Image (cartoon, rainbow, N blue to C red; front, side):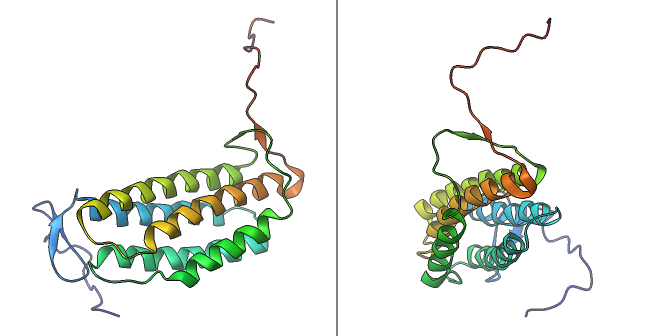
Length: 188
């Protein structure tokens, strides 16, 4: 591990730049900073899911994902560094299959909701998609390790499946989109 911070503020970012993991400096609003910042945001949202009453298996998986996301953030913060590898993608796919096997086939679109944990997991999914888009943008201007985008793509799928699992937890249900619904009448 690098140097420990004895003071949290350094004043080095007061000019609108921030330090990357390799010691170089870049603009705080640069695409690389946005990509690893959004990965950090995703990790925080997953922490919100974990703070709720969820099945132990889901909790274990989300804790593992938090570690992966910390590694991915480091990968994105240090140009040329690779932390996410094929085995991470394989683990996500196997985990996806494990949870998806017991779910009914999708026949309708699902709205975020069903429970607080499920809605929070849907929020994590959308933040994950944003992180993925930012990695795509970063990849257009800089070299990005090969598995970053794949990891986020699979992770968003897993978060969708976990949201479905959490909506059903403790006898709950998913909120299905209804295409031809009648508008609600508040006057009756």
